[in-house]
Structures are given as structure tokens and as C-alpha cells.
Length: 157
Image 1 (tube, one colour):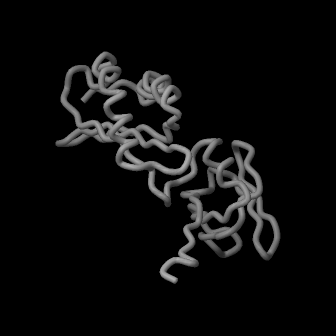
Image 2 (cartoon, helix red, strand yellow):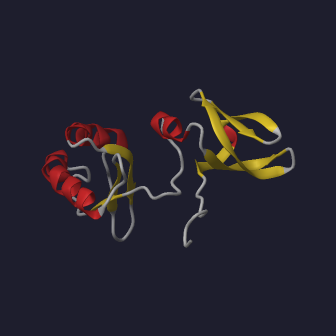
Image 3 (cartoon, rainbow, N blue to C red):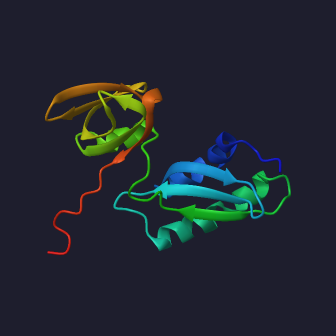
């Protein structure tokens, strides 16, 4: 199935997101038996079902005009990216600055493929991490996945 570029789709949706104070975190299109366009969004205070539904309705007409699949049917999904989503954008890294992150590497470094440390820097090509053993600079190209660490401390008390 021929599909317009993700950049073109996101560019068409961005003005609507801006108007509604919604951040588009990611846009993906999955091909297959049931093609689906999924728009991952975030808002200050977190995404709820009403926010997803509101944005879904707001972008319907624009997507109909854009026709991202050149007339082929697809399912539109609007979703929260989830608490364990990977950090991808500059804004993602800025929001996690000073917080604990989990880092999975493609290949071991200093005998480890997994690090949990505080994110203390980001320059677009590398991240700076700090833990009890000191600071470590890692190139993004060596990182398989980086996401904010999830803490369950204080839950269920």
C-alpha cells in the first residue's frame, strides 16, 4: 500500500495539535491486513481517553483531505505513548533531564548492556548519564532504547 510520508502527515496535523495544546509525540503507520495510522500524543498532566477522543475528532477532516493512503482504507488510532515510551525527541530528553532513565545498548559497554542512571545532558548526538560511579557520555547510535525509569516506590502503601 502506498502511504504519504510520516513527516507530511505530522505536518498536516501539527497546527491542530498546537491549537489544542497537544504535543504529537510520534506518528506511525503499520501496514498489513488491517492498516492503521497511530498518532501518539501527550499533554501537560497526562493523556486521558477524552483527550484522545477530542484529538481524533479534530484531525478526522484534515486526514480525509490529506488522504494519507491514497484512498485505501485504514484505521485511525490516537493514543498515549505510555509511561515506558522511548525518548526520541529533544523535548522528550528535556522533560527527563535530572530524572532517572533506563538505557539498553546494542552492544555491551564496560561489561554492561543495561544502565540505570540520572539523565544530566543531551546534545542531539549523545546523552550524559550520572550514577554513583560517575558520569558517562553515550552516543545515541549505541543506544537501542532509552526511557524514563519507572518507580513503584510508595505505591500500595
